[in-house]
Image (spheres, rainbow over the protein chains, first blue to last red):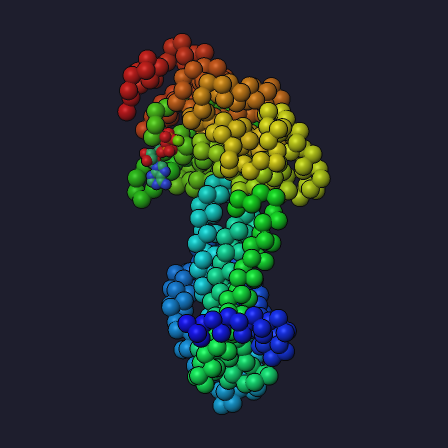
Length: 234
Length: 236
Ligand SMILES: Nc1ncnc2c1ncn2[C@@H]1O[C@H](COP(=O)(O)OP(=O)(O)O)[C@@H](O)[C@H]1O
Ligand SMILES: [Mg+2]
């Protein structure tokens, strides 16, 4: 109990004094996850729409792979990315291991299946609803996809939020590929793991509260973005 | 451009080896309203979709006076259960125009015009999905008419509507007909068939049992099945 209380006060204090190190770490957390989220959405949303409306041969395979990837433990993703990016690995020449870039890559791999899967479900439902009308109106493939993406935008926002939640709280993969290097790859989750290991529970808790605050703030911000739509129903 | 006469030659729809509709031969001229009647499961929906081109022909062919693509461009279809885009009434109306590259301002202007023609002027900013059944069907009808189709299909447009909504829909249909739109609608409501039909197609078990001018059909149907259907007996 004492730890929790002092964690709260310390978190409050760190934020209030604009603690430089805290802001650096929290900023990096946001940078890594938001970048990964943006890249993941660029991949996931068109992919989800495609597998929802198009009947191609590899469709079932793509869905099976996505589902399998969704169940993959982040640590394992981290390990695989590590092997690929390590000096002797196939992409070792890039030299991005132990940089935020490697962490972004790992997070993209972790959240793409999640976002694609959620987005796919809602786009597929909408496609069933719209099918007859859109076929009758003789829409082109791209008109169809744009209509479905636009009209399911609220569900897609939810999918993106789920992806953000998974990314910002993820620790295993980015610990491995980032290395938790001070002033380089340390983010909130890896810092929490480190401080807990050192027995600095109050500081770890403080960082934890900042992490929660951040996640809630981003959720609210994105939610508010959606709310500014005139009719907030969809 | 002219769509008619349309010639359907031995058209059929089969699903998993089962004969749903056909073979049917039919020639349609470019005037008036054709009403497709028949009991549930007779194949009315499938038949309309075959003509419209949204159901696959298992056999046979359909020839329009112009190319199939051009013919399709001048058709619209209103479904038994209206499909509402998750958008406002105005956006639902302007959607087909926007697909055809009409500017947003122009599309909205015409959408407003059509909204007031079908009595939805007060509801243009409302979400289409929260409208009543009758309002939704009127919206679907206006959305189908907004591109000035030469041929409009309607699949039991009033199946789930009460008397007043049905009358409003029929008024709009009469106006469209007077303006030169060719109508093909299915119904199992004989009253509606009598009010709207110039020609009648009587469908039963996927087969075209009778095709006749409305007056001739209602006064003296030729087949015993049609006579039974007009009497209100259960025909299968
Ligand atoms: N997609 C489908 N697959 C298999 N059978 C179908 C399909 N659609 C319709 N049918 C069958 O075809 C017959 C005609 O259906 P339908 O055209 O909907 O008739 P109606 O509109 O006159 O009620 C029915 O027996 C129905 O069960
Ligand atoms: Mg039907």
